[in-house]
Image (cartoon, rainbow, N blue to C red; front, side):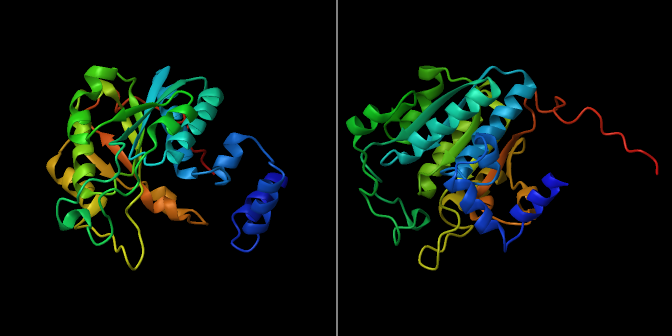
Amino acid sequence: MKQKLQQVILRSNLLRPMALTSIRKFQLGNYRQRLGLGLVDRPHYGYCVYNAGVLAKKLGYDRISVLEFGVAGGNGLINLEFHAEEVSRLLGIDIDVYGFDTGEGLPDPVDYRDLPYHWKKGFFRMDIAKLEAKLKKAQLVLGNIDQTSKDFFEKYEPAPIGAIMHDFDFYSSTATALKMLEADQKYYLPRVFSYFDDTIGNEIVLYNDFTGERLAINEFNQKHDDIKFTIPYYLLTQPVIEQWYHQIWICHFFQHAHYNDFVSEENQQLECL
């Protein structure tokens, strides 16, 4: 009864803000509980890392990788390290972290698809030395994605990738990054939890299906029969909808050797009333 009452309070649009404020203030609960309530920095990062870890454990993996495309100043990569560390401790699985960036800020937009009315060359330049001094385990993959996407797997031999945070801003660089999904599927879990940062915007940015990251996603789906990005519709049916729920896609590798491996509840028998 007590647990049901807590769920009603936390799912109520009226009472939720007060309840969450108290939980945040007094640091109540463990990491998994705070993540479930969105009371961690960048809960979308945590959602992707945690669910990738859960899937990996069910499939028998003991190590995975998580990626961030577009590191900029590095706050996101540091946060990704935090979630990887917490999930690793919680689930007993090793998680490697990689961050891709030029280190020099945005290049020139290629054309209208890169939204030059919103982005300019040089935005988000990185202080490489300062960031490296703050990183615990994440590895920076520096250079233009046109090149780093080609030699990443050979150079780093990463553990299977379970989560990717896409924040390259441009259509052109995002489209190039997505081509990495065409690599040998041993480098991926059969379903990869993906966050795309630049897919909502505002009345100035006006992200849409014909420019930017959304166009890159749509074109990728059109070009590939056996690898598809899909929306996790269950997120959009929650009583309280967070904005980032609309920025999550799941990449399905339908021909992956482990795609059909059973990972659900063993007992799903329904009793006759």
